[in-house]
Image (cartoon, rainbow, N blue to C red):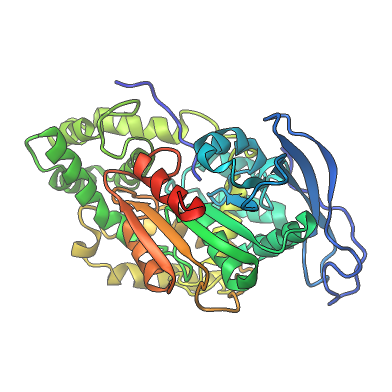
Length: 460
């Protein structure tokens, strides 16, 4: 059995705010041009300078307070192609803390671009810390939290929960661009970062040279029932089996396992993580997924269920590395296609709405999983208990008009290929490149992916 690992997907007191005096309804930055303060060499990497960008908690001015966001900027100010804004995922991942890893993965771009990363609001140094939620789900998108953990987190944030949507982050990025003094920049977003990048481009199209979307979340909403991911699991399992000549049908075995053993959500979590670190399911540095499913299908579910429990409780992810509180606050505010509608829907209507949504998911659509997995996984399980909040405002423009490169692995179960195809259909100047045999997060991990990104961003 390989060494167990936990995967960070692309924080400790509750984030506090400093009083900002603004009259209600006043522009958030009135009289206060954005600027970077407290500049010093980054502790994580010597060739970057770290500073702080102070932004309003509530940009309408109705609610006082500011947030202090850490920013890392490469020291090559004269980079010939300007600034490359790299956006991490989650939502929940930090920015500057990932610079050593990301700058190594994107090393082929750093002579041409000045790389920048930021702690998106509620992450990193200013991470939202919801202790019970953090213990229960850590960095998992799929693990369902208890209602008590969700309510505790919402209670800790109070009405501040209204100010952690993607639109708030987009406004922070525009402040950062102005603070850097650059008229236009290039955006590179991974996973949820691709959604942020797209929404920035739909809000400030004239400020973007071009854009890379890696492991794509579609601009109009992801499917909160995750039906595309459930269905693609069978294809990923069968492709791995063909390559390894396993001699049986692992998709059919998954279907045979999750029904009697009631572990569909746990198996989905295992497969999603595998699609990040071992998309061909070779059992290299990860659990032997095919073997575990085969044993369970033969009547021995013990090893499979032990792995599911280890992934769920085996290690603790600190909020500064991945804030589960920010993750829930943002997703529950952003998603407008929930079974109950958007985030403003009252709690009393949500359970019935979930049941209606479940009734519409056919066995064929969810196979090899059961339809109920669609409503028991983490997104629905968390947001059905998240109090009504301000929905994420829609960006002003319907289409990205700049050149856009989309790259997606055909074995990605975190942001399945169907989502990238949805985005490509909405992007007039977009190009989708499918990387065969790859899962989630392509750049720096696949030579073909790096080649197309380099060609798109540098012409070489």
